[in-house]
View 1: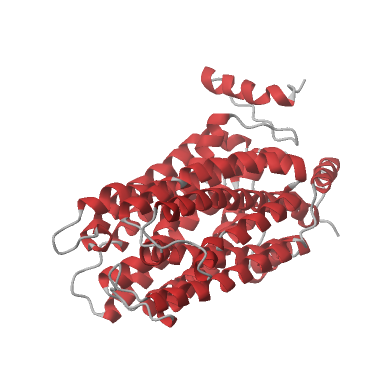
View 2 (view 1 turned 135 degrees about the vertical axis):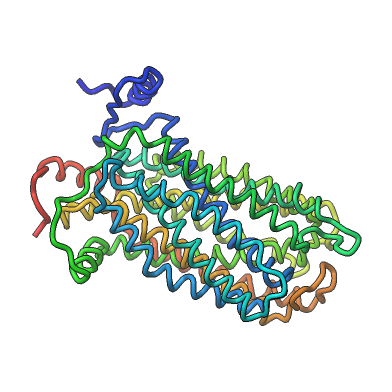
Length: 506
């Protein structure tokens, strides 16, 4: 007899503690033990660290510290994104069809751990004396390598969520842990950078360690170690479930044409396209916001490194807010409605402080009010953004069974490859846009804090606010076309149970 759903998690924990063979449920009421959720989620810390570096530090480091033209940094990121267009779907499809004694997902996760950690370290220690052209190609090559290798962990790792549970609400809980560690892992590095690393590299010549290139070598080393630990923890922590995960489809003759035909067939639905376009718009906005975040903190608000460190520290609170709120909102309102309501509040509120400064409502920089106002507003808003992202990711997980009904194939890897693709492309394009904004408003390369004119800073805000609002509100409009509800998901599960040996729907 099946154990009641509300006791299933405890039973699984007892099995793990006793060393008995695992009996993970895979039905619609499946519950996943807490330690497995934590191990599964912690793997995303690797992506969070990499993402944090690319979004927040890469443009600032190469443009303001190393002296590479901001337009060349943006172009390097754009070239790496084009490479991602090929690697993401290939890795996702490959992991869906891969056969090994370690299952479909884990070989990719193990194989990526050391190479991505090493390559990430070298991104932050460019050789001395390189020309602009040499630095450009250095960033291009390492960006492509890092982005490709991180896909080998993030796509198969994230794809475990719909395999570990088919339950509508449990997937919210799984992905809440994934996003919690993704945000806190990357944010931990930011906090360490601004509270420990940068202050340690202040010199008589460089009064702000944020502009000392030697600080980034330490940053790169710590980040690389965390990336390696995160990937290995997740792979080892879920390794025991390999025998209970979904099997690959039967062997068949595959050609390049058939592979791409299957990819397009799997992803061909209105709900997926709504999520795809909405996520792309949202991540472009996220990349733009992240690429300019330290510019606003440093130049626009005039915060010190210690104050920026406190801002980053508060993101830990935001991650708790978002991760705790998402499962609750999903149960009360459903994923789509919850994402729209939370999104409207979060994304209209995000640029509000900058808009208030543009219309001269806020007091001058340097006052306690400014700092605490930004801290509180940012903490709440980032928490709501995380909640939105979890709900949107869980909506993608529910499309797995929807596609299986149409195609007869389990394609978790392909769907989460599409998610990774959207995230990397969107945020990468946003960072490219950030570089163009910096150049267009005339913020000079290498400018010190306090050296940027009020006119330039006003123009920075005036360009940023309408741009970011347009992107985010367009995203909310597009996601409204997603059509899969809780009842629709449960109906898909029922129909799959009724035809366990059938092929693709005709």
